[in-house]
Image (cartoon, rainbow, N blue to C red; front, side, top):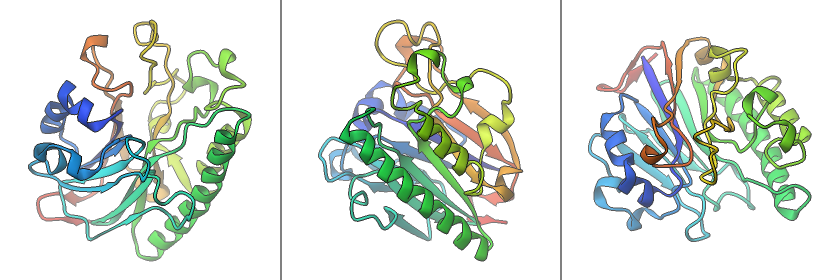
Length: 275
């Protein structure tokens, strides 16, 4: 079995002091993808930068205190790559991919955007480059007999079922028609599958992000913007998808919740052997 978690930590240094470290020690996951790390490795405490039992790789942003992604894995990656060949985005801490036995896993932090502003234009450029890379990535992996998982904060709700107040967000970044159409392409022609939705069809959510303001969390007025996208071969083996929503507002260590998917594939974390 292979268990993978994706979580936007909303600042790894802050999250570590609020409960992330305890969560990491307790998780049964084989791979944990982090987004919005907001720190360079040397700024992290030793037990956070190199947690016992994990191999950690980081892609910090050149913009201090912004973005940043990372991957923790029980098995040492045979290779890792930062960015996807983009002069504009490779140094912004939004993409890292690692090669593990039989599977390449990426951690993604897609820009938030802001409708009708240059920020939205930037988001659109990122999306276009990312989609092209994901197709190339899938094709290369298939030629090598590997699968691909892209885990992260995509900052887009795909359908009305993925956002509580969809009527009030029709003109806002994260639920714009072109963004949603782009995700349809990713979960279609690009060759990837939304494994959480596949295992939870026809239900609201499960939401993964709630604003820290007001009563959004208490009222479960959330957005499902954290996805684990999988190529067809491994997507078919997904057996469980869980959003680790905190029991209470006070117990949250991020404004996002961990998304964990288990795949029924042979994966020996102790020996680094998968097939």
